[in-house]
Length: 183
Image (cartoon, rainbow, N blue to C red; front, side, top):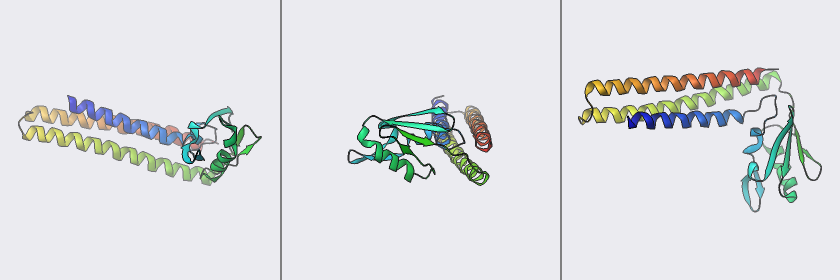
């Protein structure tokens, strides 16, 4: 059942990618994942913030960014400010404080729409994995490698696997949606 194992692996990767996407969506709480992927102009290159500093959340509404190279404080602060996250960082020369403002209702609704779009992209990835598996099974049935019965059984297994992962996406979406809408 190599096809099924490969399909499960592809679906697991799609789910994991969606988890990472969801972590980058801002809720009312401070999360280091919020800033990890911000790109900073450093050492004549664009680098992810997580490679240049330690990001911590000592309080529910505050992130602390501690650059490993103190010369990058200004560049990091500028990158955070110019990101589309709507944050206003300040620094004391060595550490950058990033207060997380509470979300208003309109912004919460926008974020929920973004989450639904991300979930749909995840479902599309699952369907793509399902299609690839189904095509492989059907071609093996056509060439005689698989009997009709075994082929149909495998097609059903692939569909069950797809349904299982779609359900996992729905659970993740519902959980993150509640987190965003929580006041």
